[in-house]
Length: 109
Length: 113
Image (tube, rainbow over all chains, first blue to last red; front, top):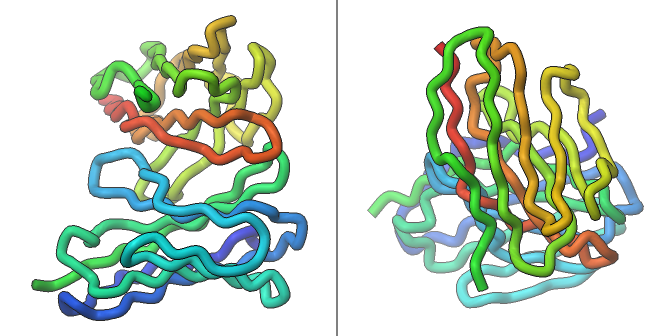
């Protein structure tokens, strides 16, 4: 079983839709949970990170962590064409990092 | 504050050659990690350096090596290049302590012909 599982998509939504991106994990020791956005042929850009359980909001983006279910989510409200990218979840405990394979998102104008 | 800088951005090499990639971390970051990214495999961890010492290593052959200097800058070397080494090589830096959030550079795109 992989440490982190992420549905690769692709996911295609109309502009203005609410997008839900998810990852599951198996290691209960993970403490930090991150979401990265990667545009084509660019490096991943850190969007948000959360420590332990709970929610974190930043503008149109909300990250949720449910440690009891080993499940994390990223919600994008009022999605824009500029949100079209690959979204990677990542988790770490100490100095060990694990990444999901990424979900490709296209927002159609 | 400057971000993570990787040079060069693009490289074209032929099989059998060797290549050195460079990474300058965010000021104050002591940990540098290297990843290989390909469409089929996603992000694959190569190794991590912290205070000039390799702290973690992924499952790559010995042709892949790295080092870190006293100013935290890091280099990655790939010897005897193979066609399958064509990929985007990403460097990420972090503080390296308890709050170990990684920040990525733009990557070096290596093409092996």
